[in-house]
Length: 116
Image 1 (tube, one colour):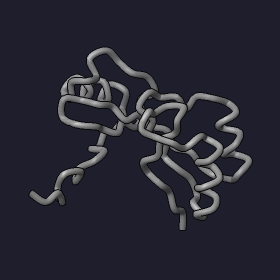
Image 2 (image 1 turned 180 degrees about the vertical axis):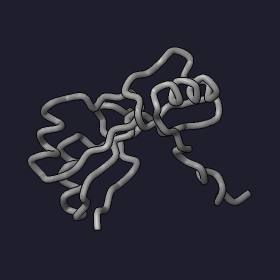
Image 3 (image 1 turned 30 degrees about the vertical axis):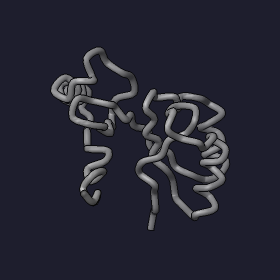
Image 4 (image 1 turned 120 degrees about the vertical axis):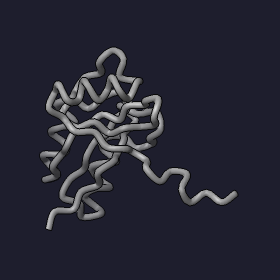
């Protein structure tokens, strides 16, 4: 059975991460993961040495973007570049549809369990 972490960031592409790409490879290997889904905020994952590190460790990599929109953070699969206007969820939807991609909410329950 393949086991993936489907929402991971590194310091190379997201300011809210403290993991270097090397640390991510090491941690994913330590946990016995089959691979990870890099969901960088700025798409900072197009680096050959990064791909090589994952390949050398036998880990699969799925790439996505995490886009900050007027409706919250959205994970986008099938697009590899930012498009003007993507901060509006309605414009993002159009761009994703045009690219044949998929989008899902990144943090659907972020505040659901907060107590008053």
